[in-house]
Image 1 (cartoon, rainbow, N blue to C red):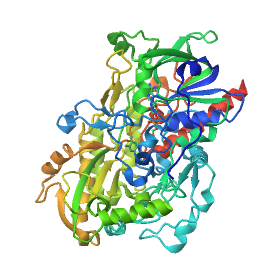
Image 2: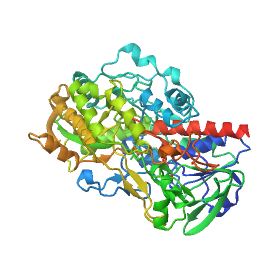
Image 3: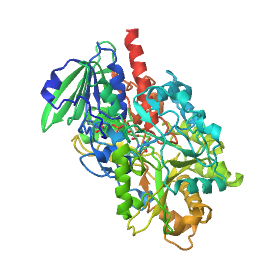
Image 4: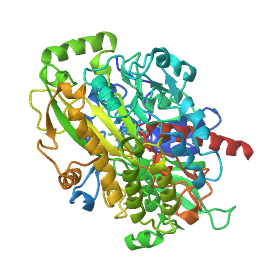
Length: 610
Ligand SMILES: Cc1cc2nc3c(=O)[nH]c(=O)nc-3n(C[C@H](O)[C@H](O)[C@H](O)COP(=O)(O)OP(=O)(O)OC[C@H]3O[C@@H](n4cnc5c(N)ncnc54)[C@H](O)[C@@H]3O)c2cc1C
C-alpha cells in the first residue's frame, strides 16, 4: 500500500512552544530525525523536532522507486535553491535540490545506498581529535542505522556464486532503514557492467567493506516487502507514539537564541529557537541543547542569522556578530556531474519502455500493485567507482598531481591539510576519483519514441571549495550558494577523464551492441576543447553537497569540534552532512545516517557523565 503511516506529527505551534524540551532539533531530515529518535529512547528525555516541510505518509511520488526525480524542483517538496552563476560553467546557475518535508532530502533522493572507502573516512580523524571519526569508529553506526534484506543475490557479471551470498547475512542489524538489492535488472544493466569490466574496471562484489573501487551493484534504501522508499521517516515512526517525542511540521526556524553562558566565561549557550508558522512568530525553549540539522545549505544560514560566522560579513549585513567563526559556510564541496546520452537500437529495453509503451506500463503497474515488485520497484544499481590508476597511465597520473599542485591551497584554512590528503588519494590505486552511473533512460530532452541510456559522470574529490552565505537578514531569503565548479584545471581534467571513458563505451561490446547512436554530446568527432566546452554546458550537481559546517579545530577554520559542538558554544551542536570535513567519494546518505547515529551516542555519553 506504499504507506509509512504512523501517528501524525503536530501542526499546533502554540501547543508545541509550551513544551519544556531538553533537546530542540532544527530540521526533520536525515540528521535530525535520526539523532532525535535515538535521544528519545530514554523516556525521561524530552525531544522536540521542528521541520519546515510537511509529513507525507503515503505519497506515491515519494514512495514508488521508479518515481525518483519527479518531485525535484516541485516547491512543495523541494527548497529548490540555485547556485550563483558559475564562472567555470560559462555563467550557468546550477539547481540545488534539497528535500522540504519530514524526511528531508532522504524523501527526495535517488535511493542509492553506499559507503566510501576506508581511507576516506580515516581522513576525517586528523580534523577531529576525539570520538573516533574514522572508518572503524563509524562502522557500528552504519550498521545500526540499517536492516539488510537477507538472502538476496548479487548477480552482477564478474561475481561468482559463493561471493553472491557472502556478505549480507552477517550484517543484518535491525536498524530502521531497510536496504535491499533489486529483484529485477533491466536489459541495459549487465551489458554496461560487462563493458566496463572489459575496459579494465572490475566488478566489486562488496563495495561497502572499506574498499569501494570497482563496479558495484548498489544497495538501495527500498523496503522490498512493500516495494517503497525507506527513508528517515522510519526514525520518526519508531518514536512517534512516545509521549517524550514531539515533531512540529510546517514550521520555519528563523533564529537560534544565544546568550553568554553563565558557567563558562567567553562562551555562548543556546536557550531555544524562534520559529514562524503562517507569519506568526513563536519561541520554544531547550533546557539542555539545541541541535541544528537543517542540512548543508540551511545549517550555515541559520548560524549566520543567529550571529555565528564571519564577523566582517555579518556586520556588513547588519547582523550583530556573537561568535566570530570565519569557517561558517565555507568549505562547500560537491560532486559535479555531466552526462552522455545514447539512443538504443529498437528492441533494446531501458526504463524508457515505461514512457513509450503503454502496454508495458500497464503490465508493470499491475505487477507492482499485486506484489510490490517489478520494474516500478527497481532502481538503476550499476555504479562504477574508479581510481585514477585504473584508467590513466603513470605519466597521466603524474600530470594530474602536477595540476593539483597548481591549485594552491589557501593558508590558514582547511585546505592545506585537505590538499595533502587528496594528493595521496590521487596516487592510491584503491581510492576512487571519479564515478560513472548508469541511468537506464534518457535524461536530456527532447526524447523521441525510443529507449535511451544516460551515463552520468562525476568528480568525487574536487579541489574546488565553494561557500554558502546569507545575503540579507531575512530568514526567508535564500542564501548565496557558490560551488566554484570547474574553477581549477585539476577539476576540469578529472571530469574530462571520466567523460572520455563514458564515450569509449559506445564502441565497447556488449553495450555497443545495443547502442544506436550518441545523442549527447552530439555525434561527430570531438576535440578535448569541444569536450571541455561540453563539460561547462551539461553540468549539474549530483546533490551531494557537504562540508559547510566543518568538524575541525577553530584554528584551521573549523566550525564544530569532534563532539559536534559549535566552537564558542556550550550546548549548540550540528548534526547533518555539513559537518564532514572532507567530502567522501560515495553517495552520502549512508554516511549522514552514520554521523547522526554516532552523534546520538556522543550526546548520551556526555549526558551520563554529568
Ligand atoms: C535529488 C537528490 C538526490 C539524492 N540522491 C542520493 C542518493 O541516491 N544516495 C545518497 O546516498 N544520497 C543522495 N542524496 C543526498 C542525501 O539525501 C543527503 O545528503 C542527505 O539527506 C542529507 O541529510 P541532512 O540531514 O544533511 O539534510 P536533509 O536530509 O536535507 O534534512 C534537512 C531538513 O531540515 C529542514 N530545514 C531546513 N531549514 C529549516 C528551517 N529553517 N526550519 C525548519 N526546518 C528546516 C529541511 O526541510 C529538511 O527536512 C540526494 C539528495 C537529493 C536532493
